[in-house]
Image (cartoon, rainbow, N blue to C red):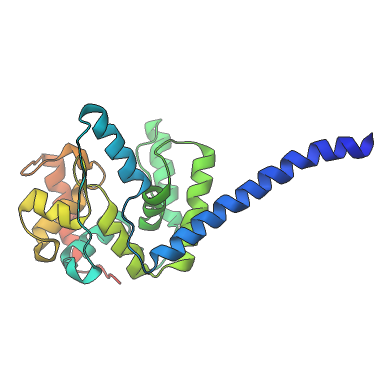
Length: 232
């Protein structure tokens, strides 16, 4: 009886552990594949497309992949300075930024600041939903560690620049440059790059030519930091 009881207790746990290992292996395989192959669709892109098609079944995303060398260095510097100033220094997590974000959120009484690095944002965009649960945050942490271990900083930034949102259904630097300014990603100047970087936290708020006092302040701050920002 005692042996049967132990089996009934341990068997579900072993099944759960085996399933967890399989899931993590699935993430690792995809990350390894994307070292040399470009993702065609991310979980975040698919979720956005699904929501768009609830209103219009024929809706499509604006997205065109461009290699790292065909993205303006101004945009690379603007994104790193705005989203993750220590990108080249950390191993996936900026603990100081996370602590500051936590302190600000405590003062506000709600989650306002994230403190996520580019690698953490990429983990969410590639694989996860937008829900806020402890399990999803734990999985994001694990995926971020995998990404930083398997991919170079250059590849992480290349994929990030090609999959983040810059408007409702507008994804990646090339589509963003054409949508907002009518130019290619390679042709973006410092002011345009800083403006795109300033839009990242709320990408669907701004259409072509949109401007607010807050956005302009963010652009000025990013412009001031860009020249000193190192990129891979």
